[in-house]
Image (cartoon, rainbow, N blue to C red; front, side, top):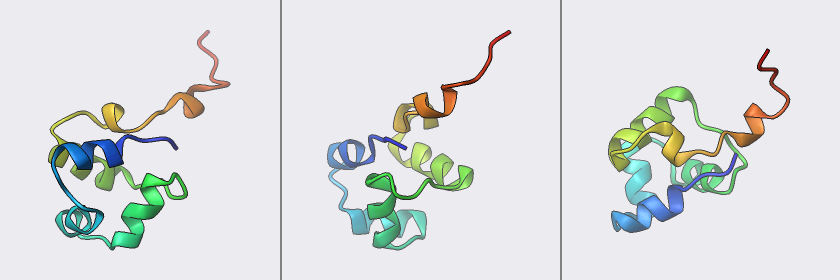
Length: 72
């Protein structure tokens, strides 16, 4: 899933390690999420939204999840 974590981290002058510590995860987890290889749990996504002072939808691109959904 595409996301804006790297940009948001830069705005707050946070390294991957800094963000990992704030979230209680490894730096490798942050790398995997940033590169789209791993989708975070809802709780982890919520914690990111709190740190970045925004909505989960502002961090992650859910367009792929919306594709194919019927709106009847």
